[in-house]
Amino acid sequence: MPHSFVTIGEVLLRLTAPRRERLTQARQFDAIYGGTECNVAVALKQFGVDSALISRIPENDIGQACINFIRQYGVDTSQVVRGGDRLGLYYLEIGASMRPSAVVYDRALSAMSEIEPGMVDWPAALAGRDWFHFSGITCAISERATATVAAGCEAAKATGMTVSIDFNFRSALWSPEAAAKRLDPLMHYVDVAIGSARDPILGVMLGMDGNIPPDERTPEAYRSFVESAVSKYGFGKVALTVRDVHSSDHNSWQGVYFDGSEVALSRRHELEIVDRVGGGDGFAAGAIWGVLNGWKPQEIADFAAASGAIAHTVHGDFNLASEAEVLAAASGGADVRR
Image (cartoon, rainbow, N blue to C red; front, side, top):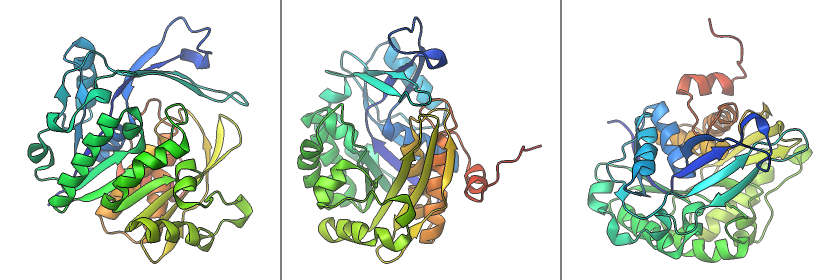
């Protein structure tokens, strides 16, 4: 039986300044669509997972363009609720060298921020699915979106689905304390927790720092952090990204995976970044794929890290890499394919 996955989240119009220009100097923008949960669904579809998206998108030409963009990658949009006045958007300035990338959000009163639990046909949306995924970003946009996520989690657990979260903290949307307060009631639904080892939400929720210096990183160095998460919230599994920022163009990148007993740390990837947006979503998709397939912890850590690494090399939010390409990256292969 093929794996099946459904996620809930906002899809945004992304407007990127070309040629790494500053937003203040740009006179045109590259327009595409994306959003953290949708990014995970698209990446999993490339691996062969039957993926679906729950969202709320306006019934207008921009909304239809957004849906058309998602559909081209094979994601099921039949459970997208049509309505609302506007699609949220964000402006992206891609950094270079010592100048960091920058995002300006324009998503207040977006269609997704005004979603209500009763707008979603939950039996239809979850039918035949075995995994439900959400992120902290969706909960950040409004209390109504949070209530809808909670309704989805409850319905998913009632049918025996696996539930996962990617904490995905965004300082432009809320503080770590506000994020922890709103997300904490949802944690009892979560089986698989995904995030960044340096995520300030996790720091507040766990009362400890997972950002370990590079020369001290070993699997066991992360044990107290991941075991604390499991002990407090009852997570079955935890996957973490580990990032060192040397410049906007050069990051170091690893992954940690904990299955409840064994901690695994991936090899270190040195990234020459094309587009950083969606890197964490590529990691999340890789971790979910490994869990779906019942892989060993080291295999999951390696695959998830490689999936996130490749996502940094692809323009746009979506990680358009096959399983074979990710496995090659996990083993360090980057020669020309002929």
